[in-house]
Image 1 (cartoon, rainbow, N blue to C red):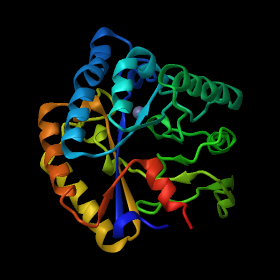
Image 2: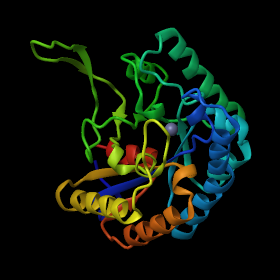
Image 3: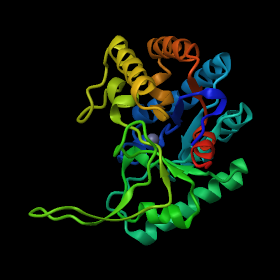
Length: 278
Ligand SMILES: [Zn+2]
């Protein structure tokens, strides 16, 4: 698992361009909520592309089919700037209780959308809102995905998640084989949405940027000191991080991380290629 040029730790900056799909999947489609998604596409995405360009950072974008179909040119801008796009559902669907045949149909559909509109086949998958069924990992294997990124069974160490064969309340959980899809772990601590977005009924958001920036910096410092080689995967959402005061925080974060000589900032598929090289 060599990282290039003597680097000891990798940082993957990832962006979930959910736009309106994030809300549609939750059954919210009123005009005010749709406008929040539109802000992400029309304002957040160009601001992110601009700041990544300024710092020369290649990133990984998870884009649902709905965003690809609604804002194809924004998605093409992402690719044109050297970033990669991974699969992130058709309409940001919740997979927890999804019947397997429907989940397979939706996987086929989203890959078609990537190929038809963008001309690229996604190598990775990020489960929408981190939801998964007990079929998801096997479906990812069958569709030839290299990697997945939404579980939190580790923090900085990519790993092959194991099948859960039995859950026994009065006994032990029984694990099965490891899946052949490499997991790049994430966590709610390393993303912007729950910290910042106010969503009536389930998320207070509105956190201080000082608190969030400290959390991200401390996480990275720990990884660089104690978990090498390792990977930290940060998750951003254009409609959240794209707000001006959040962009100021991101600017300070990127200024710091691009000054760290041991850190490799890369796309997840490039980290996958390095990590899986013997
Ligand atoms: Zn998402």
